[in-house]
Structure formats: C-alpha cells, structure tokens
Length: 160
Image 1 (tube, rainbow, N blue to C red):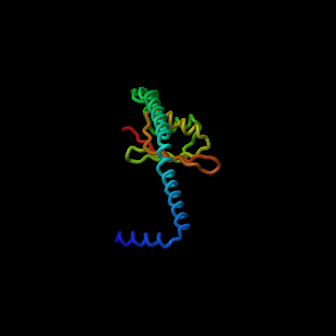
Image 2: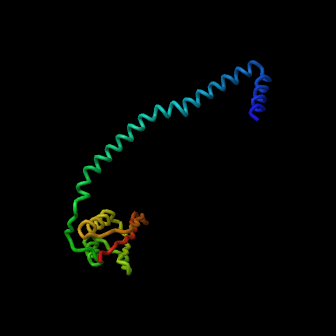
Image 3: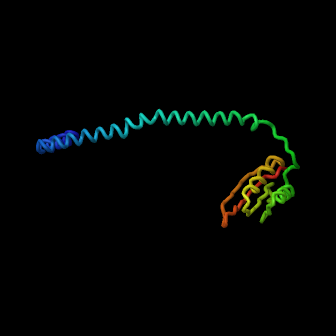
C-alpha cells in the first residue's frame, strides 16, 4: 500500500512542469517553516515566561497561606451564645435583616431565606454567626435578584 502511494506521488511530481515543481517545493518549505514556528518554536519560547509567572503566582499563594495558617489553625473561642434559631433571628435583627422564611427540619438543620439589598449586612450576618456563635453553614445559595437585591437561601447545621 505504501508503495502505491509513493509511486502515485512520484508520478504526480514527474507530471508537473519544472516551474510547478519549484512553486510546490517553495510552498512545502514555507509550510514547513510555518509549522516549525507555530507549533515548536513559539511554544518553547513562551514556556519559560509562562513557567516564571506560574512560579511567581505559586510563591505568592504560598506566602499568603503561610501567613494565614497560624490564624486558621488556632482554636477559636466563641464570644456569643451557641448558635440556635433564636440566636440567628436576634443577629439578623441587629443587622437590620428580616428573614422571609425560617424552617427547621428534623435533622438538626435550619433553612433560612433572606431577600435584601444590603450585601454588607448579609455577609456581616454570616460572619457574625459563624465567628461569634459557631454556626456551621452547610449550604448557601446566594443569587442576584431584581432591582439589585440578593436572594439568599442558607442552611445551617445546629449543634445538638
């Protein structure tokens, strides 16, 4: 099979005029140079700068994690009462938020729905009850609603 293909290509080459052979040879050389440049030389020349930027990013991330690690691994002391439904309602009221629905289930979970325009109050509430009351945020779905509002559906795990 290879012999037939080779024979047919040789015959095709011989059937061309010398001017056509020169044009085809020049086209082949230019095509080879393009492939060499595009798929071999350019990636090799870019690899070093890409690796350097990846290294710089990795080193920066390592420094940030190394700085935060003592704080993250330190035992936390809660400054408020243990997280319950009443504690959540009180913390939301202090932040000026009104949950539209609070639904405890039988599996020690508390589902809460909040619609608000105050992004900082919502995230501040989450920060307060997690850091001060030891709330465990099991699931959060926060989406942008109409008129620049936030629709949050939060599920907390209550500690027994």
